[in-house]
Length: 316
Ligand code: FO1
Image (cartoon, rainbow, N blue to C red; front, side):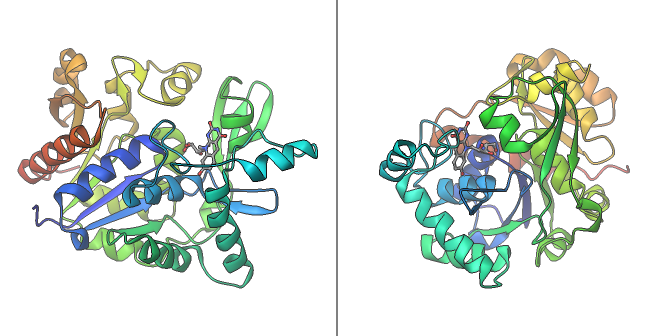
């Protein structure tokens, strides 16, 4: 078991996999996960928090293994009857998943905070790792595209990431407060791990909460690349880089987090770029970063922590 206090910054499926690995090799009380809430949106009158749910379902061992999001052993009776009435089915909500959205929405309407609801849901799921939303304020991500500005899930799911991106906006982020526990966890962090999540729409919203980028810069921090040999393992990260005129490489990702990183974990397929990363003052660590199963997650997490422990805090 590793005794460092670790804070992980995570978004969707890729981040949840590494968090699962970290939870397998650490004492749960030493691990805090700050989760992106920029993907959150209201749909069918329900308030849906996809990245919080993906991280929690994964840690609870009930995530759909095929998609990474939503529940395992799911049924679709509600969506089928909704469809028969002409309702929108582009965002697929399964019967078990809907139970969570109904209860979260009920409690939010009753005045509970997202962070308190998350604490209670994690207790119900037997998750002892601390899971914190980045903020209890609503900070929806909007995507500027060649077809105009789209709310995140409209771009990501309804339009299947097809529109060409021009930029992103985290609505209201400048007035958002870190959720309770976020500042304290970063103060106590021996290591901050930026998970292999989409830098643009999963990590940047977290870093854009006032004060958080500075706090991360002051900690010993490493990132695990979500890009392997120019491609994202899942989702539109590489496509976004290209559409923004940036080469979708591990160097680009390490530069995306410039000023924050002491170390950078990249895949063996990108070993040729390790020298460039090191030349920019960031210590590279090359290993197999593709997590095909829970054993891969555990192995990568162990390597990341061993690297983080050895990594010196470099002056930034
Ligand atoms: N992603 C999809 O591509 N299609 C879906 O129908 C879909 C439904 C869905 C339902 C609940 C949930 O928690 C996540 C869901 N996601 C779906 C993923 C969601 O779009 C996330 O924002 C992505 O995983 C990016 O983080």
